[in-house]
View 1: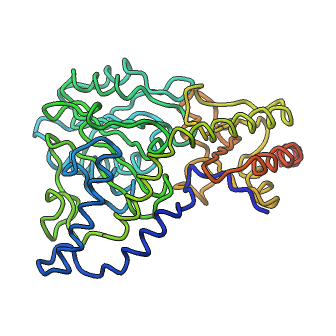
View 2 (view 1 turned 120 degrees about the horizontal axis):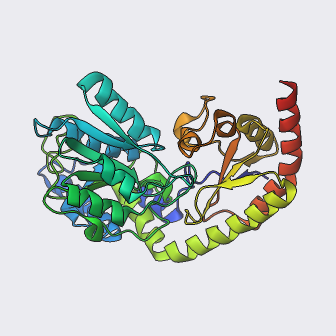
Length: 388
């Protein structure tokens, strides 16, 4: 029996979302068509938009459906760049962001001439408001920040970060992909004013039990964004193309189920995480927990001194246990964790980490399978490390 502890990469689809997708996928009409079938598809789509808006506490018009978190992040950052005032050319990028953000900003730097201003993380992987404030100024196009770090699970003080950006007159984008579904979230309370402060927030369906390749960018009415591509006036002229009705409906069903069970699921995840933490530290006393105590409820990020995280992952996988060395977006690339490096650790430590993430379908048996195998895996991995 396999044990899946990589819910931070993708969590299994909820039955409610699967059933909603199957029911809606027969809606073959284009929701932009003006005939009856098209208008029925439009009503179904807009009902889904209203559900997502209700869950994130936003206005329906602020919800722009996308193909997932990566597109949402690209739309926020590139859209802000392409609509920037002429006297602004800096993007503020905290260390340790997701690769969707890092790679988007790097493209803007190399291809569009953007200047990039970094913001350090503290030793627990958190963005400090004072550090963000020191990087902001009248030359900044947009800043970005994670709601929760997708690798180490540390929560960022986004309310305070938004206030700092508002005071500086700078738009702030929040990457909420990792935190969505685990934390209470109100865009209405976070939203900035006058095009400054928090103006956009990225979320994705596959993190909450919805379908993959479906997400949204929640965009304030005051945000200045240009579209990534063109070919129609759908969704406030921010995203052209035929909208995915079935994906939106399934996303909405997952969001409703998540919202109804969030507190219970968070308690379930936190309890299993603590069982896992105690068991691993008992089996491998050398292991160290990275990240802050204020973290995602299902996240446990561990440093295993002297062992290759890649070797540990392989050994656990052979035992039927699925974990991660970091973001799924770096899968297949043997590179040290940039998040761990940003926290002040050296490259050796950055190559010796594993991320365990439990979710609503995780069980005590899954956790116990890890505990039963981690000691022998660590012994084998450190032996391999000593021989190499």
